[in-house]
Amino acid sequence: MARSSDETLASFTYLLGLLADSTRLRLVLLLANRERNVTSLCEELKMAQPSVSHHLGLLRMNRLILGKRKGKNVIYSLAPNIKAAGGKLKISLPPYSVTVDR
Image (tube, rainbow, N blue to C red; front, side, top):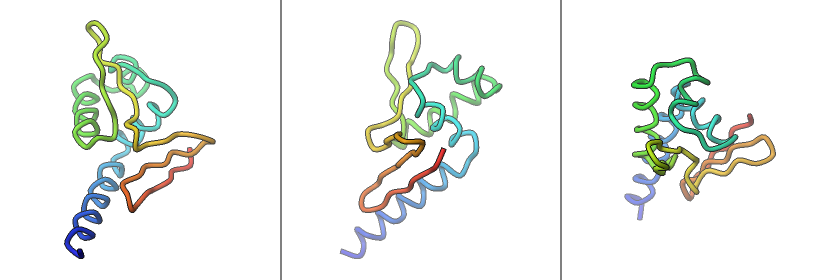
């Protein structure tokens, strides 16, 4: 049983490390407002597309965001384990969760 708890804690620690990067946290906060494509995110962050795409890839691989194809664009949104409401962002990885005030 302890091994499972250790693995869960390690996963949660990795998640916090992922969000410790200011660009990735800003991406998550932008997506909390609405779905967006990479062009919109690049403009908002004033960053080049390859850099934004790299960060989006890390967030997507770790199931923090979802990408769905719409024509030639990929539209990004928050994953179901992230809830945005009342100026707060709650990220859950049971039995742990973290809340960010926006």
